[in-house]
Image (cartoon, rainbow, N blue to C red; front, side):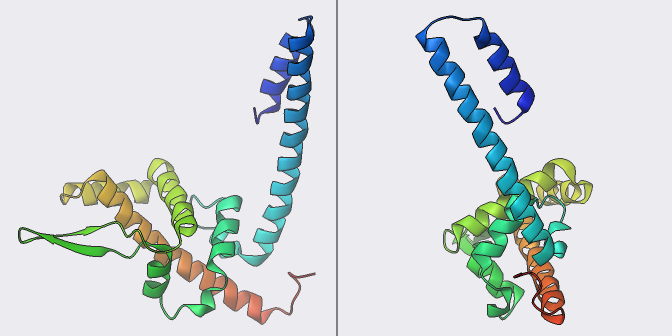
Length: 183
């Protein structure tokens, strides 16, 4: 019940119902309304911080405020990675080769930071639904013989590079400006 109209509809329906169960339900709905408002406040606060620290990351198609905040927190400083490949290994998007009956393919890496991988996955799925160039890339991969899962994995690896470069450019901008984001 994130949308206020849904909370209002439930409250209106429960207003006419008498009894203990209805009263308890009204109290729960009121708590949901308060918690939803608090979530909105916290999200706005996080959004302001992320916009100051990582505008290039927020410019990546499909990367919302909470995904960007998760990426920033889990990366813990992009300058500690020597290359985009090291960053891909850290976030679990680096491909692992697998051989079977003289057939070479790549599989998902179970290593790396799973939270960071999940944030990249959310961006990939969003791009797959709404971003035309990502859809074209997935179609090309499927036409080349990849399954949908393999194509999404490849898209996540490309997104890892995009995120790495966005974090690098944000780091360069933040180092050029005196510490204002911490204030």
